[in-house]
Image (cartoon, rainbow, N blue to C red; front, top):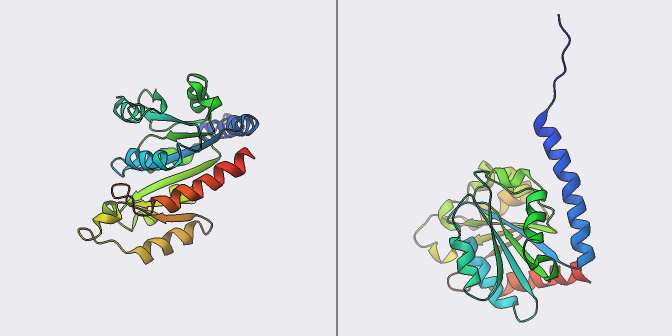
Length: 222
């Protein structure tokens, strides 16, 4: 039988990306720029949540936003309209950002000069969880209409997130959503995750989330 070698390409790609991500994190720490990787499925309210956070923190920190999408610039326009420095990143069909793409984004606008930069990742609960972007922290949004069973269906996303934001709590009268069950499911996967229940629409719960983020920005940039 002929000899041949098997190469695990995914393992190699991820290992290379992890090295780039570690380098990027070190550079961000040196520049005192806290980068938050914000992930979720489409329609969970990422941009609305981001606007609510910006409203709470913009007086205290210089903020930049990197909007990642397969196409379009709708979200970047929404953020830019409130006077926040923004760049749109098109992934060319890819369903995630990696560390190299994140660095390109920072290099192509004044991201390195900001106290706080948010990377609004491509909307899905699978691919973004697999790639380390080099961010100082990962956060994800789960909206009430998506259901409390999502930690069971997408465990990797919940396992890599330092913060889980349960959004659209104002919609609970319309949808069946068990707060205790979702917390138990998240804790079973990631005991250390911070969990916030908010309504980006009404503002409920946003002050506590913004206060916690401010503490993380201060720790990173100290």
